[in-house]
Image (cartoon, rainbow over all chains, first blue to last red; front, side):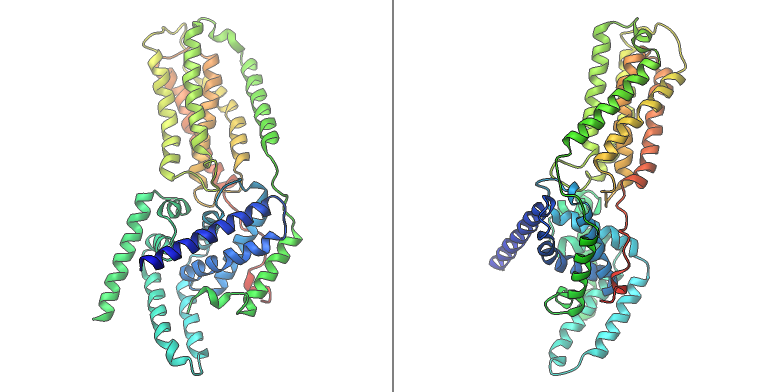
Length: 195
Length: 235
C-alpha cells in the first residue's frame, strides 16, 4: 500500500509539474501549450465536477468555463504559481453557482439513463462496480455541501489540505474537520448498508 | 459510472468535441500574453500618490500640523505606514499564488486595521496635547477622498481574478487603502484625542471596509465567460 501510495504521489507530483510548466509556457505566449494543458487538467476537472454535480452537462460547462478563464487570464498568471489549485478554485466557483437541487435530480436521471443503456457481456461485471459507484455518488449528494466540498478535494482529488482550504476559502483546520466529518458520515452510511 | 474516462477525448467523441469547442473559443478570443506588469503598476502607484498629495495640499498641506513636533510626526507616520504596508501585503494573494489569502487573515486585516490605527493614534494622546479641538469631519472627508486611489491600485492588481472570497478580499483591500489614506491624513492632522480619532480616523476606515466588501464583489469576482453552455454547442 505504501509503495502504491508513493507511486501515486509521484504520479501526482509529476502531473502537477507538467501542468505548471505548460501554464508557464502558455502564459508566456506559446499557444500550442493550451491543448496540452487542457489534456492534463480536463480529466481531473471533469471527475471533480461530475462527482460534485452528478450531471455531465454541468461538468462540461464547468470544464469549459474553467479552461476559458485560464485562457483569458493567462497574462495575469503569476510566474511560479501552481495552476492546479487555481483551476480547481475556478471550477468550484462555477459549481457553486450551478449548485441548485437540480444537481441531485440530474444525477438520478443520468443514473437511470446509464442503467438502460447498459447491455452486453460486460454488464454483469460492471454491475457491481456501478452499484458501488452509484451508492457513493448518492451518499455524496446527501452529505452537507460544505463537508462534501472538503471531502472531494482532500480525499477524492488527493489535494493537500492547505491547498484544498485555499480553494474553498476556509482555514486549514476547518478543511480538515469538514473532510473528517464527511468521512465519518460515509463510514456510518457504509456500515448501515452492509448490515 | 462517473469516471473521468467517460469523457476522455480519446474514448468519447463528445469529449473530443468539447475540447475542439474550447480550443476554438480560445482561438476566437485571443488573450494577451504575460508580460511584466511592473511598469504599469509603477505608473498606477505614481498616479495614486500624485492624486493623494494633490488632495493633501488642496486640504491645506503641512500648515495644519505645523504645531506638532517633527519627531512625533515622523513616528506617527512611520507606524501607520508600516501598518499600511503589512495590510497591503496581506490583502493581496501571496507572491506565488493565484488564490487569495486565507479568510481569517483577510478578516483580521479588515477588522484589525481600523482598531490598530485608532490604538496607535490614541497612544500619542498620552504624550501630546491637541493644539485645537475639531470634531473630525474634515479628517473623515480627507480619508474618504484619499482612499479610493490606493484602493484602485489594489483592485487593479487582482481584478476579476478572485474565485474564492472577493468580498473578504475587497474588505481587506478597503482597510489597506484606508491605512494608506491614514498616512496622508496623519501628515495633515495633529489631533489625537479619543473622540476625534474615533470620528475622523477610525470611522472612515470602517466605512472603507464596508465599501471595499461591496466593491470587491463587483470588481474582484471572477465572472462567467460569455459562451453558450457546452451542452448546447452540438457536442
